[in-house]
Length: 173
Image (cartoon, rainbow, N blue to C red; front, side, top):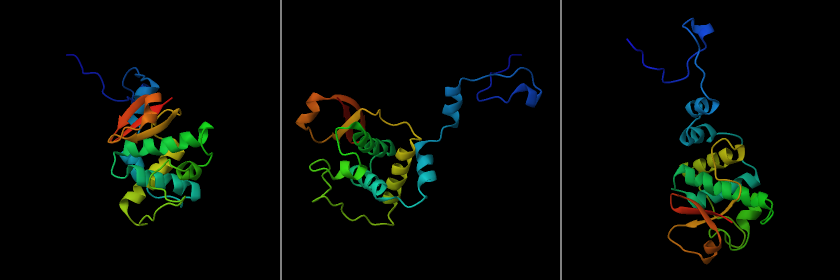
């Protein structure tokens, strides 16, 4: 009788004593072992207090993508990080977010109040930590722009659409 092939990583034969060992490509093993974004949010929900720049990143996630899928929240964080590293925008995350006419929730260079104990703020902080740690797949580094799908800004016409995640559409030049 034929045996069904194993469905997951098999321990080395030397440890099991059961015939030859099977090898799996590193990408296949990583896919099996890689935590989901939801698991990462749970893992990164607690941690050291965020500094001013990190809070700025989390604030952008909170106000720009609260209620969006976790992947969309991570994409918003990545755009802020990408902009700061691009040489085209301010070099700090707070500078990117507070830049005039870039993020609609910023008023006179100030962030609105966020209720400290709310679950959405804890999620935004976790997403910021995940983005900073670069432990989940994110948008490429040249993705610098996005907008909500219910608006059609003219600037998008000069860019290449990368992906739509939740209610946001992301672009590169």
